[in-house]
Length: 143
Image (tube, rainbow, N blue to C red; front, side, top):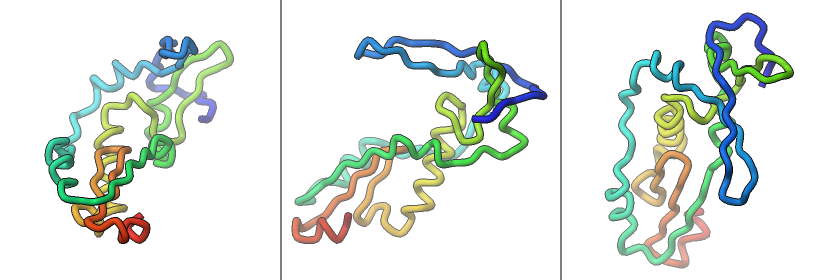
């Protein structure tokens, strides 16, 4: 994050209780998301991904949970993610959870990165990957 000095959008911070009893902070991008056009990038269909794992002897499930925070925001769009705190206004330098296009943007990146493996030995749904092997002895190589 970086401090935002000249803001065009300003979102509120909201705290939500987690099942553990701790609190999670998130930025309410409701107004920004209303102003954004809908992303037309197709999301995978879960039932097709599940069916694609049939007849495989080995499966590994990987969660790329921090991957969202690896995609930089376009510099001129950073200020649109500004949120207020008692210590100043800040904006994201990388893609933030809660943005309308975050899921589709991340899926596009995953599809690009794994384009040679998708359908062959990898299935991907946003930040969840399944590495699959028809034979157990091939699984380490597929991973």
